[in-house]
Each structure stands twice: as C-alpha cells, then as structure tokens.
Length: 147
Image (cartoon, rainbow, N blue to C red):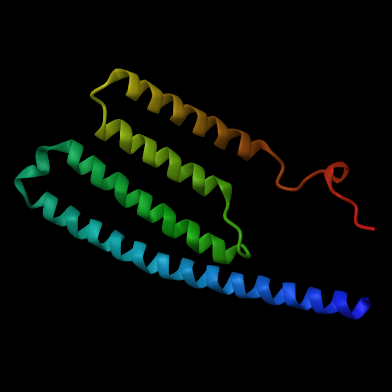
C-alpha cells in the first residue's frame, strides 16, 4: 500500500512539474508576442505624431491606453516569474481599470454605457483599496492545521 502511494505521489509530482513547464513556456512565448505588440504601438505613436491625425486626441489616448495594457500584461508576466509562479491580484485590477478607462474614452456616445463603465471603474478601485488594506498572510485561526 505504501509503495502504491509513493508511485502515485511521484506520478502526480511529474504531472505537476510537466504542466508547470508548459505554463511557463507558454507565458514566456506570450510575453514575446506582447513585447512585439508593444513595439508596434511605439512605432504607431511615432507615425501618429508625424501625421495629420495628431489633433485627434481620442485616437492618441486610445493608443496610449492600449500601450499601457500591453505594458501591464508584460509586467504581470515578469512578476509571475519573480514571485515564484504567482500572479499578484493588483495587476489584474490595474489591467481592468486601464481597459475600462479606454472604453470610456473610445465608447462614450451613450450616457448609460459611460455611467456603467464608471461604476465598474469605481468597483475596481474599491477592490484595489480593500486589497491593499488586507493582510497578506492569513491569521493563524483561519489556516488549516496539518496533522
């Protein structure tokens, strides 16, 4: 019985390690793709500044916010590798806030939608505020005791 448990544990360890390697490789590949898109946005900025559309601030702001979304995703992937394969929740909130601000700037014709987007931004900011004031470690009374 003990031999079976050891084999099962070693098999599960192998599967976990394999899936972690696949995940890390995929995220590294995604980081390369997003970096290329980030560079493409920088080139787009240069073209936009030199074009006749420089006075259309909606286009410029939209491009800046897309740039920051790419930047935040890359930062999140870097943090994932630096923090022992863990995505910090605050980065998801940053990306959500930036994406919603982009929607407000791009799609602001209907007042109801804009109000809804603003409400979502408020919820995300409140979530970020709560996250910052919550202790990072769980109190001992809430942790599961191993026997």
